[in-house]
Image 1: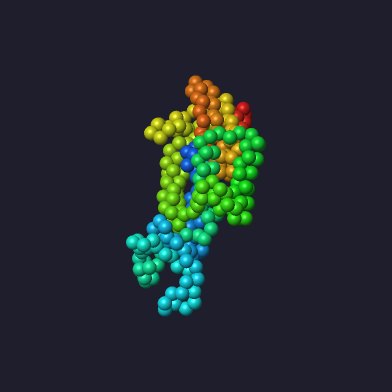
Image 2 (image 1 turned 60 degrees about the horizontal axis):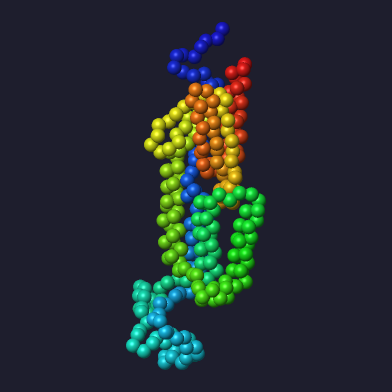
Length: 282
């Protein structure tokens, strides 16, 4: 003879209903390469150890000069008559020590600028097809190859003597605020636009400030869209847009953009829906 559990208590072998939360994200989630490279190049610039001196226009570099009190010939900067070299004091190193840490070559600056341009363009423009990936990969490879063989200096001299470089503080001035905003947007702000799937029900919030809507999973249609190869596969590491269409009286149709790890999430969601349909049939 078996006895039922007391009122208000669940059986010990009861399994709570599984919930799968799916969050949409803004395009800011794809900006991780910018802040990551900012920290990397700031560290490499600091390790490089070179410093930049701010000098007046017309300053000359005189090589192999003899300096009283210094052993051996030295290279010196000669300011135009009537001007002086500005000093950048730094505690413990004297008043004449330049303070800006800058890498010797401009490869870091070129790669950083190219990364920002690529992220800006391809997170705002939809690029479809395999040909687009070939073009983008070609641009990235060409940028790295030219940097490896130190050919950017010759190219910039040809287009007007440009020199793209940034000091360590400049990289951090971009990387640190961008990382803070990225963390806030990804783990706080974007959490207010979501779908919650359970066996038999979908709860959704489409915009911040909206209330939560619950609909039945009967006749629901889920479609995974990865039509932007660079944004979804390269920057998003397998992200995608989720298109949802519900049946029944609600008859809702909406998109949840930039869902991370959409493939594995969608597979488990479809399993939940199938389990619901099998339970109702039995």
